[in-house]
Length: 433
Image (cartoon, rainbow, N blue to C red; front, side, top):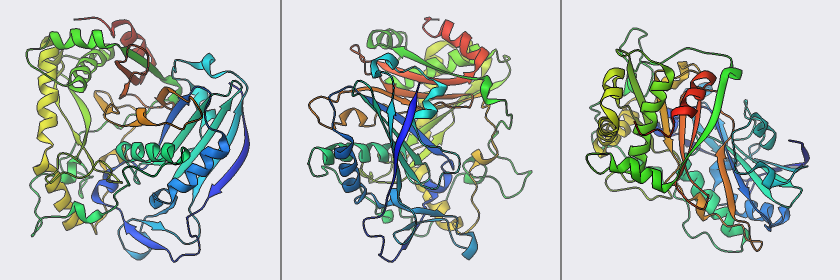
């Protein structure tokens, strides 16, 4: 893939001369991984010009000041980490690039190490939000979006992306973002009932019990990324095998958890887990609006001995997944908020900070099925979204569930695994055992 960056621009704050303000990170922001997330979106022509896209982007960023902010760790002044909004510095990075090939030559999207050419660098980038507009020879477009995960979760970025599309078409934001951190208020007095130090954050004492994590690292070149496609008909067959009703995500995550465990060849007595991201917006009571901008995600950790997971079949695995997710309820989220109110001035390092790039025997499952990226419309007389995928992931054990964009719909599943395990998974990924 031949990609040539033609122009680089910094989109500054709406008023860079304004006095800066500091917004402390929430306890959810501090639990989130200190990394940039990369998403690629492909649109067939005709689609709006780069000029229209950039103009719409500038107008949209006015409503999302966190994306042009700077991140301060707060250590110099013994304060909580925060976003610095306004003032000097910050801004969003915008790259415009030309691709020598036709977009259809790369569809449907399959994971490729060449994807790194389509997005800005994510190793210690200067800006929290970056966009690269990749215009193909045919007029097609791939928009690469990278954002710092401590600023926003996937739900937040889907709100932003839909708003950007409306701005390009000259429309007002239908659902403005909500930044009111008082919605994450602790109880009075605050109290927490769960061991958040050890499960979400590293224990203060090295020998304190906590979440078991793999600190194993391998060469990133030994990692393979694949996409498995499950049409609606196949998902219906899986659900028919179950002894009760489960959601599509619960069904597929249980199914892939078993398949990945088999592909890894884990010993029968080993304890396998699946880490599932749980969106708290609708778990909290009263619920938060879907447009709440920031992070409101915690992790469920269903687990089982490998022998039970494999011999118990899909129904057993789905029940384990379902029960694990149900435990992360309003009570758990509120306990976490209260923990942040009590210990927020302390150093809080997420458990992922010590983790290597091999998650085995764990799997991490993230669902993008409920996001609204499919509603994105940049106008231009066409511009249908025809591809949607994470960039290359150099880590073992990540599974991302994505709405299928083909004629049959269904679900596409992005999987990153050690290469030899990915080969086995590809062979057994659609067997009904």
